[in-house]
Amino acid sequence: MLSLLSLRAGIEAGTLTQAGALALVREAIAAREPDVGALVSLDPDPVVPTKGPLAGIAFGVKDVIDTADLPTQMGSAVYAGWRPRADAPAVARLRALGGVALAKTTTTAFAFMDPTETRNPNAPGRTPGGSSAGSAAAVAAGMLPLALGTQTGGSVIRPAAFCGAVGVKPSFRLLPTVGMKCFSWTLDTLGLFTASVADAAHALALLTDRPDIERLDDAPPRIGLLVPDFCPSPDPDGLAALRRAAEAAEAFGAPVRDLSLPSLYREAFGLHGTIQDFEGIRALAWEHTHHRAALPPLLRAQLDAAGTIPVAAYDAARRVVRAARRDFRTVLKDEGVDVVLTLPAPGVAPHGYGSTGDSRFNRLWTLLGVPCVTVPVPGDGPPLGVQMVAPFGEDAHALAAAAFVERALSR
Image (cartoon, rainbow, N blue to C red; front, side, top):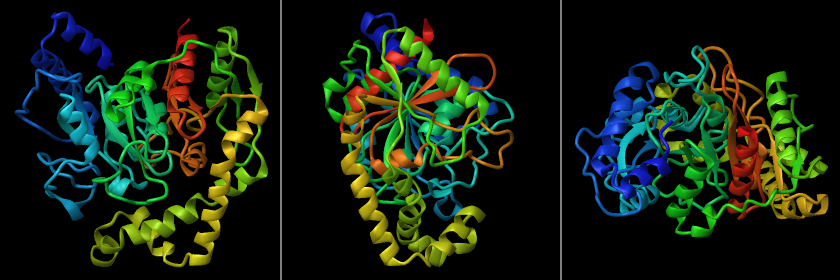
């Protein structure tokens, strides 16, 4: 994979120019994109800044996020060729830092579950996940050092695990979702993909103007090992990867203890669909009303059914989720842990391209609005990963713990 920090180091050392860094990315795209299909559009002649902390660093943008100079088509024929007037704030921020918005990456239609045609670069014949399929695949294939994605259920964390990249879903609203196609205003979160945890921490620190985010603490975190009992069991390979990461962290000096969550979290987990779908039919009301036949089958059926969700059920679900969000920090404190080590997906990516995989190990954390990081677990065969979770607002701790586990697994 292409490392953002390695490219920056070469530029700062004078062994690589900004144009040279971009040329490396273009060469990788030319070599890999025909087989992967991660990109929707590519800027043929971008301006390459020579100033700024990300000068010469190319990044990809999921095709539900606005870009002024490339189409934003939402993965749907409904928006074919549509050109926004302005960049989304996150894109504008990366450009202001010197980054080059080189490509739009594939997305499932409106960031839902109908699969893309993108192939998994590290697991031939298996799904890359979704909805941020192109961003995950492009980074994992070494085509881009940084890509933006979005998550409403598990659309950053899961494809990162399936493809073998680092994925970060920050705390809710740490990154602005303005200029991003809305599906659920309670859940939608902007995230990113990189080659390493250090790359992710650096990018997030720059994006948010919060340098403390990348001051990764080397101290061993107190880890709570969670295999959720409120959803179907993981696959054996997913569980084995989780156990391996826990053992590596413990051997590296981190105290690890088994963790379970109170019944409130089982209740909250079951309400994700109520909130997502109640808001989804409203967020996509124009598309559903005027272009229903053009919507892909899974999304069309979901929106058709969503109109029957009572307002009272939605309001009740919001109350439960607010309580769960409020109490999560206390739950971890009472258990004597700093972070949660858990699964990002049931196991390796499923065979075929008819599904984006199962988000059951992601939905609770998206509901809670807490920071999550996918850490790849090295090994032979299709990629596997683990997920680090921290309390709301503790993105630096989530990334530090992820970096700790990443180092432990590399020993």
